[in-house]
Image (tube, rainbow, N blue to C red; front, side):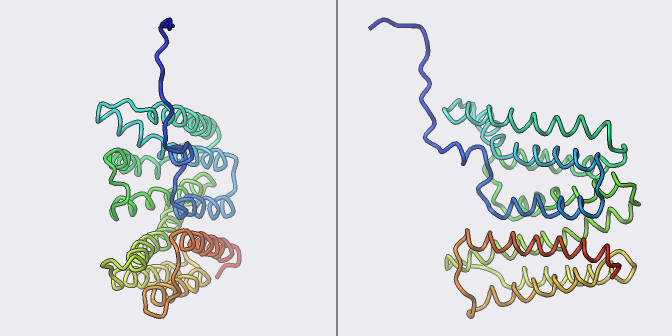
Length: 272
């Protein structure tokens, strides 16, 4: 047989979907909840482009962890080329949104993103080290995603205090939920878990929301939803719970997150 001089690269056995897209259902909710609330509370052209940037950056994370991880391990696997290609696709979306937002959003709209940028670098390195499932990493990732509502608020000329309050309000939803889901999954798998930590986080979140409401930067509707999530945490980590698969739990959390985000929007426009 003649040698054509063309190197044969075997196809990756890993499904392209698992290389290109996040596999955790909850992470999609963590992306879109702050964006949904932010775009409805503070709709602007600049905010729309900022949202495109954030979506592109979020999508880039999954394939990028394969690219960076394989590079650090000095490996070139079939999946590396696939991951690199999808990283370029998603990075182009992020770049388009970023360039457009630079021309349409005010400079201080990027302050929350600049604050979050060191955490993003840390998360990329943790992803490459296959440590993305650690609790601290997931909490930091949720905190970064929550920053989007602060940027959208600033793009609509809201004060820094309002933007910070919106960020805290989303953190009051995301951080307790991360802790609840991780411990609920451990419980379902009959592993060691904690009920005190997620329940305590939900209590602290409700207290934070109450404090923001007292100073005029929160909503009673959001507090009510937070109390419901506290009840969900208590019952979900008890012996009376209904057993759920990881997918079922993730879908439920996405629904709860949408309700929470809409409560923030409704409370803002209703004024209570």
